[in-house]
Length: 398
Image (cartoon, rainbow, N blue to C red; front, side):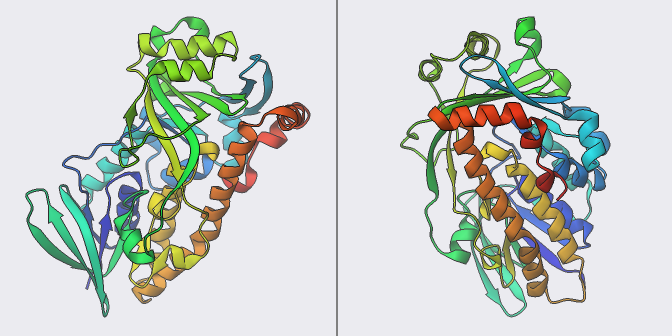
């Protein structure tokens, strides 16, 4: 008899989990609380470790149609504009790691996963369904769902995957209530049309501007049609942390960047003219995963931000969710093994890598935002070591 997996959440992680499970031969029932499949945010970077896995899933052509593939990562001083270091991407990344380094709009990545899910006869997508709680009994797990019309229903499956994000209800029931950590960092995000920018501000590279207590990153989207811009500075989050996305007064950001170089200030000031304005995200996370028991227990497993939310300083949040889904596929493909043992294997094979990426992301934030002697040492080391400091073989080969 074909096994059935229930998935809470229809974001990038949830859809990736659905595809991985279907590829393993499981029937999938995915429940998304929203009334439509949408993806908030702007761009994401996906390293060769992630691109390689998406290609193995047959998504190479779909990626080529919507992603950008920068040739270089440049690191510049936010104060002077001087180039501190550079890393070759493009063909160099393909040669080193078997896949390119890509940048893509979150909506486009979500869309290509959704398109494949909709074409699969094994995947059943359900909107307006909020997973309220779950109960394990014997070799089955039952979820209680509240539909958009208020009706309550119950659905039984052989496993449950919680891919319901940073404030995961599945996680809370599985592991107990634990507050997210407020990082003290605020992310301002904007997307600009490149053809509306002055030529001097257009770019097809990934450029990171480093300054004291702040940094800005820019990179192309949609094959260079758009420019993604993210500015992160130290600051207190909005009072309403339940709302992920906030409008923002651009003057606050411009004030924080007042001492930065002219090219960077010109780029920031262009946002109101050629973009849709800034959106503000408070950056929250959790401590690194402490063991496999924090990713799976019994017939329930966690994936993506529900398991290991991370700061954006290694550009691997979406990537780790996709890596999780690929490992989930391998584990669920062991059809002669008890489901709880399959999920245990999934957790054992993922928790240490996720914990390492979480910790390195946090540490990178300290390095990016360094001031005083630490900043001078960072800049000097980057000038001497160059690519050896910027490349991440442990990550991209994994």
